Image 1 (cartoon, helix red, strand yellow):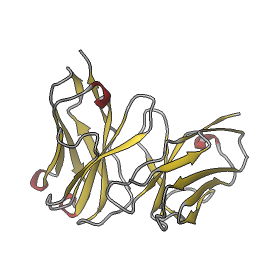
Image 2 (image 1 turned 90 degrees about the vertical axis):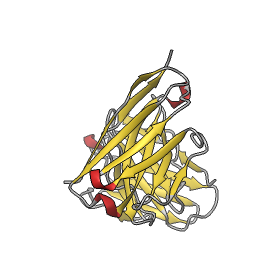
Image 3 (image 1 turned 45 degrees about the vertical axis):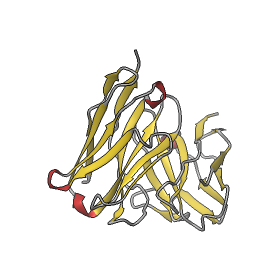
Length: 107
Length: 121
């Protein structure tokens, strides 16, 4: 199974900050990578697919990059609504695993 | 607006069984693969099982293989997860999530609100 490792596990930031989360795959997954946002008590929400494609309705301050084994999710200017936990997931197979999550918290 | 509504969660003793349901609306359910994803309290997301649109293709995580069975009834726009031989570590919120058309692999673009399963004596 391909393992997905996110860093950092927790990120402390302020409104207006530029933040970047990294996701590494244990082997190449081309660009079959998604990013999800989850708030407490809510279902995950799809943000990015195919590593860099913004899902419809997602603000343009979110962007994704990378290919192969290393990927990033960047929030260009952190907004109050963005404090949440973010997960990457590979979908090159049906068994795609999630990363362990990155919690973005108030600094 | 696509809707997925899970039900069937609850408290069950170790070794017991439970059947979860996910009712879909506002899209052609019979055209899409579906998944179950779970989240233990305070933990991350774990993919559990997949079923293709026709129901002919099914996959399971190693952690549930042989104990859980995924199925669907396209006439009722419903997805199911039959869980047996439940263990403490199966305690989680269970989400259904939509996959791609047919048997294609796609991002999980719609999720239900989740149903809590608690395994405890």
